[in-house]
Length: 273
Image (cartoon, rainbow, N blue to C red; front, side, top):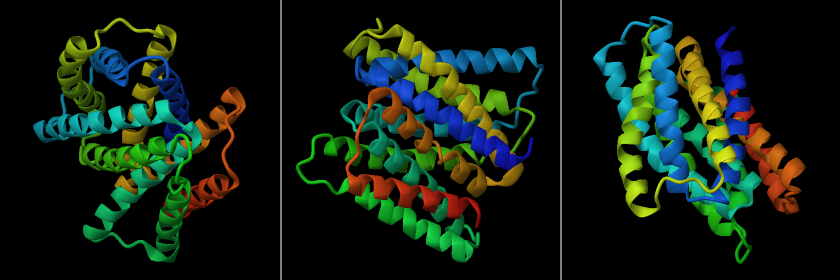
């Protein structure tokens, strides 16, 4: 499978996982959701790496994985909180658009050329995100604002994780990322909210999608580069939004729908740069 296909598939998996996580976070504490899913993800990745006899990657890859896991934890907690406040579709798109913009900005600083499509895409992402977030007095507006912060965090998570270059030890790198976040979030959640889930089916159902999404993303990055992998993976809000509309009967305002379309067009342009 080519890197673009891995990236697109990761966006589908991320989208479904985020929808389930958002549903779980509306019934449970985001702290508890993360504390229960991250150790499961770390265990699954470590066990799979062992069964497949994957060699350990260079120590630098493991350190990048751990750093990404810690940064990603903050982003995930903010994202879960934002999804709980809603509207889920707008929150997901705003976070996804900015998670794409951050790696692009870092790539530009590092010398990557965007081209005309890339610059138009970046502008569309910014405009679309602004249209999603500027709704004074609207219920759920705080959710979109927190979602924007989460998107910036996800952008740095993708960037850090993308620095792991060894293809042979990919599962160990992801296991270390989730282990690092687990070591932080589990004791905090145990002390503050406890570890007994209120919506176990949704909490544990979202974990495999998070794990698979990270794996597919890293496969995409290692085959096609940071910008391509991150940008294609950032299309996941389309699937989260679709599920929110179909399952939750969620209604976005006309201006928000325009923002969704513009932001997604921007992500597509960035991916095709």
